[in-house]
Length: 303
Length: 303
Image (cartoon, chains in turn blue, red):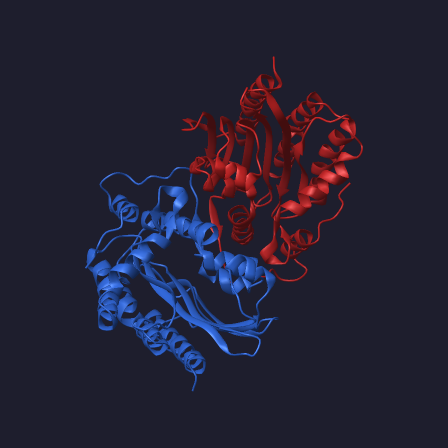
């Protein structure tokens, strides 16, 4: 089967596996599924979870979309070619308990064709990042170590580059370059070259995708029973405000989706359930809240 | 005194008057003031109110700023000239009670100078719009009638044009062109011409600014004692989500401010205090919530 066909199968398998793992961990909420079609070609499967024991709101979405290269795409994305294909999985999980971090992953594959429908370009992109509300150094190390181990298995040069890409991407530039969390890895436009063919990038993305349980669910299991109070929720809601700011002001994927007639509800599933905006909120010095904020202001090496 | 000097005085007078009127209506909360300076020239007075009897969060801000025309401004704003000056008042008020609407106003004056510091261009802009969570037709009519009366007093052609400008501006384009509320008036780049000199536009803006009590506080007084419950708050929080989406995705002023090193906390005072994002939330048909949503989807003529 083609890379395209295999990738489509993989993405749907990953969606099933991750949703099942999240439901088991939650112990109460089940994913609600909505299939949708895209006017220009293709569609998606949106799965959302809400009001669980552990997960307050989240989505694990896949889409398989294709179409003609429009003038807007040529202009805004510098795309050439005649038609395109894209398939990916995107997830954001917002837990109820402020001691459990929010997580985001996205893995995608793109093909571009000429008028004779031959592939003229193709690439993989993806990554994952963690947004804790309270810092457990042990968890940050574990999350990064999981992806460093995978990176190293494929190419020793990957992790430092992809870790930095992630730190440089999830930034609220309007807030003194505050990061939305402790990062992870991020890569984009990974095309086949003399060093790594397209199957290499497929396998790399697949291995990262399947690492979700190891990297994230293990942290959820460790922290989900910590008792929290109103002050902890307050801080979580403030930090969720920064998540909203990043996604709506800076995130290229969100903005491109919304401005190119993407499916709004599927794109905005990433927004947290309840959010607080307060004028000039500052945590007290030498508190766990201030510690988290400092880490967001100055990304560090975890492994 | 120059237009500039008079406008600076007016803006600060208006800020005082409006803050006083809001404090009287609230009966509990007082504005907290923060003066700030801008690195490139000028500064502002930010006044925020929170946790009042009536007003959950709000800001009434003024700024008087100036500087050199940068390459970025030339490129992004098509600005010519050597230096610029801007002064304005901007307010957003988010009430606690979902039966009291949110309001926004902005009035601003701009001057552009050549290298000899002579004015080569100047203009006024401004407007106000109302965002109810439950529709009281009487209030919508009253709000629009107040500004129509002012418009008519200056030029009979203004109201229909400025009403439409407002309807066309406060739009969540990613949500089927849903408006954030019931509109009001909006005008921009109003330069002196053969019909209306600069004093005319000054007086028009001043009259609109001073109409805040008549247009808005009268509505607050009428609705502030309506009893509300958790379901009403839930709907208000959902609608506030749309307010956040508009401000962070589409509002030119917010985005320009954030991307040009404006004072983040003063700009984002416009965001509501507590916000709810839910996957594909739809009000039940034939409810007051559905009625409000319909009005946002299809702006109507109120007067």
